[in-house]
Image (cartoon, rainbow, N blue to C red; front, side, top):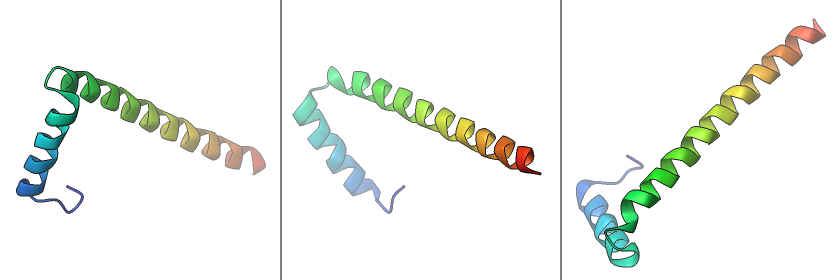
Length: 58
């Protein structure tokens, strides 16, 4: 995962808990998940638009 090993992931997790607090972490995870989902949907829509534009040119 991004070239990170388990020790690095544990350190990042501990720092995130210290900065945001344990109650905010699930909320931030949810926001991040929604953002990634919207980004992926936007990319799929963009690909579909590109394919339909190429078909209209033919």
